[in-house]
Length: 59
Image 1 (cartoon, rainbow, N blue to C red):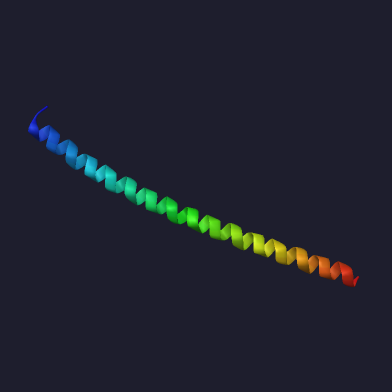
Image 2 (cartoon, rainbow, N blue to C red; image 1 turned 135 degrees about the horizontal axis):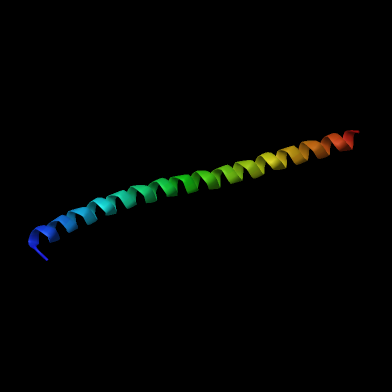
């Protein structure tokens, strides 16, 4: 393999590594958001259940 080819492949691998790193960060941020959303959703469901139960007891 020629030096130019090796140099080009090294640069290409750096670009790909940076691109994968950015994709990983994006996925991690989305995963964190999804976990937060799941917790918030569970809290909302619990609130609805509690309100419904309170109203049923009053009836």
